[in-house]
Length: 572
Image: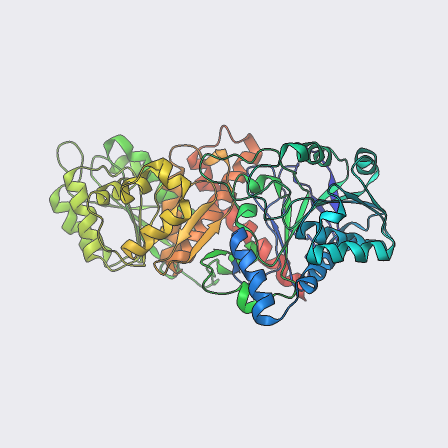
């Protein structure tokens, strides 16, 4: 669905850009307080960049995991279903009231607990003197348990409740439309009889607010498509962010995302047994390595780049340029005499280290020892882009991994060199495969990897003991302990040769500046994404080059720093 461009104003602050307008800076955007988290996902050019005031890691859950949290809150902590539903509905109503101060509201209720939440929203907004009408798409007589009681409380409060016939007229008049049609329990595409309602809501001129999830958005099985869904301007999800809301294609329909933890016990929402995580941008911004004014080249780390060969000299240039743009003090590029003039012209800021070569311009066996000796002076390594995959290169990669103790990023050809016999690694080694490389490393097909990306990245990390970044839309980072982080977002600007080489140099630079491997991978993925989006804003996604992404990396850092500063300033 494509909605009209609109500005959404927050009382007391700057306008927040709607999901249909290209991204702009987020400085000055007001933040929701207490138990709320504001997210906006950077999908291409269609959504605002993320802003939040939540400063700790958030657990991401599947629909089944959230259902289990709900069950345990009732069974183990004595929190009734009615209490949870009332808290959820009040939280959604509070967000709507505080953000939009609407005069006319249309709440569309289906069945189940999502409808129950909707009836509570309607009751609370009605009590706050808004002109509220509920459209009951399903007869309230079909409601059970807490949802039935929520309906009764809305009736008792005097909320007007009508059937579906007047829906088009009510939607046309509403400032805000509340989607309480289907919740997280939906297992497949929206049923045919519900599609007209979904389409009517999608065409509504007012702001669409989804309760928990936009109707139709769900976790997909391999080969499954979403079908007909509601595209919300704002989604208020309860407890934890849901996996379907943070990952494509569901995230395309979320708009702005607010997480309301309500009264769920923290030990349930933050349990280490939940192995999927999300870091808000305001938190990522605080990770960026500090740069003291009195620092020197050595203060900010030395990166060694082992990359490039006669056919692929550009890969080394891109990785080295990215490492320097990401803030390392010195970048050492190991190369041959044949390629040295090329690199001196392309990146004069780099230190080139000439090692032995054969008549064709490739590294010799003697070069292996020369490189190993020099690595003792470095803080991090990047190995693989454009290196080649001959037996000689395979031996070099394996020797470096076995004998070097400094952190390193292993990418591209170096991953191929490891695929035949996957060694045991260490956590300070960051592997950065794309889905095809991941398939070779795990002995699977690319389709199998893409169908189970979380399982694939966790499997490679636990098997090898390394940190793993699985690239692609909604990149994933896994630690050897099985914890996985989502790095949400995608843009076709990164679907271009060389952008992976940029990411390699970027992460190596962060490692050299002292970051933990999983944090360097996660921060690197988000900076990389933002740099590409910035380039695409200027010239469109089609024409962005990897070298331009490398040069835009500083802007990616700046955007995350702005998020952290906005949050800090908002707390004073």
